[in-house]
Amino acid sequence: MKFDSKYKTALTKRFIYKVSEDGIVYPQFETFPSELGRLLDYYIGIYETPKRIDEVLAKIREHRKRDNNLEHLGGNDTTFIVKGELTTFDSEYVSEIPPITIETEEAIEFFERYKLWITRFEKGDIPGLTQPNPYKYRILYDKHDNSKTNRTIKLKGSFFILAEQSLIETVKIINSTTNLDLKKNESGFYEEFPAFTNFISGVEYTILGIPDKEYQMKEYTYDNFHFRIQDNSKILSNEWVNEGNRIKEILGQNTNLKFKE
Image (cartoon, rainbow, N blue to C red; front, side, top):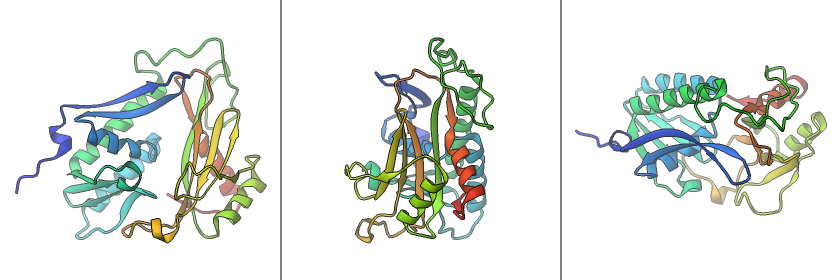
């Protein structure tokens, strides 16, 4: 039976960086027609480092060999499932885009291209994104980062904490171990997700809880809290550092919190 994949038939498939009017740089996957690219964009935010991309590629290849795989990859309402030679991406709840199925080999190609692209970006090998702002800099103390202090650096991060205690108890542990001082978000911005947030020097630190059962998707297991970092500062930058790795390491060494890899 012939399978018409939206990935195979897309006229354009490329990774890009977009810069907002206030200088925020963010990644995107662009396709034409645009529907597939808009859907796969949601997965860029979950697998944002070469290491995490390698890990998910290994899992895709492992799940591909299973006779009847029922385990979803991804996180919260942005998941995908590998069933043999076909892989279905589903973030309909947050994106309002119906699930899209492509060939598993194409899913592997997507993540492999993403890894190559982000690696080139981190090395400064993409033309137009290699010159930092010479007039502004951020000093970042992070043993994972070898940057000099005269480089413009923005922060990002994303990881998942197993929900072995309530969201409030988890936040108390984080606040007692760090200076993040997360507070309950009453804005309604995160809709069905309970959230605790704080802004520090233009950087938003957020932990998303588990939605009430009436908002949960039946095929997904809600067993973790999503901690993420988004740099909304107006510092112009073409370089990013994963601050989530440092925070995760601090929590792993000083608390009983466990993480979903």
